[in-house]
Amino acid sequence: MDYQQILCEQDGPVMVITLNRPDKLNAFTGVMGMEIADAFQRADADDSVRAVVMTGAGRAFCAGADVSAGAKSFDTTDPHGAGNFGQRLANGGRASGVSFVHAIFNCRKPSIAAINGGCVGVGATMTLPMDVRICSSNAKIGFIFARRGLVPEAGSAWFLPQIVGLPQALRWSITGATFGAEEALRGGLVAEVTAPEDLLARAKAIAIEMTAESSPVSVALTRQLLWRYAAQPDPFHLLSIDGPMSMERGAHADVREGVQAFLDKRKPAFPGKVSRDMPSQYPWWEQGEP
Image 1 (cartoon, rainbow, N blue to C red):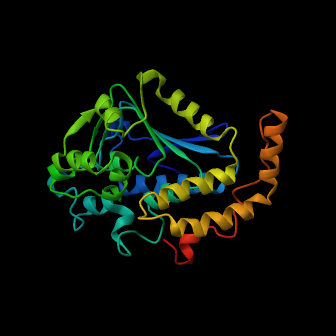
Image 2 (image 1 turned 30 degrees about the vertical axis):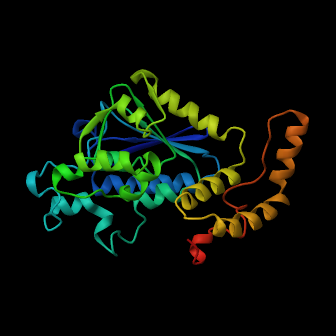
Image 3 (image 1 turned 90 degrees about the vertical axis):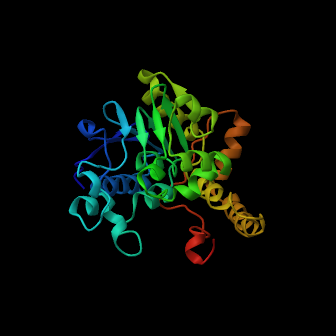
């Protein structure tokens, strides 16, 4: 796919996705959503990519949906509104392609949002399926849907309480207020606040820290286990998955290498590839499991 509204480049093991409509404060469109989904699917399929970082070009991360059509910007009977919602129009909420939420959530590589400025509406919710969020000191974030007569979208009514807890999610979502970097840090939405000029380098450093000495297959499985089971009412179904998975993994060359590297006091060189070495239980949720 030739991207029109994002940039996508690889810096060593890190894929960097940049929302690229700086003259529109990177306002979201259906085209942008499809391009984000495609980029995450590319990262998922490419064994040379270990992590994904997303940021915005210019002074904003993403100013929410493109409202340049005025009051009808969210009306899907209008061409502009239909373009804003893009993939979400067909098939019960998404088109035949994979939505950006699905692509980010299902990606087998960890992802980091580097929030460089304004980040509201869908701009904020697109960061929630990512594993880490950091922001610059001049970031402004808002789940502004109630102030536009809308409801939280892109799965954010599930993601946001998972990340910050229900009381904080309710306050931010019901008021629809915009808040700054320090409040985002106190509330648990972001892990770090950096100087603007340090943001992207820090996001890449976190990506390396998360993956440099970890098995790619283990990372892929770990993020799915944590995301998919954190909200379950008890651990018993998880036990039926992680037990057999651990035994199957225990016979894999990755585990032998991990143990030997520990004994040798050296960094491991895991041979396993996400593209070929996922265990037989994966993806367990496509076999009728939660």
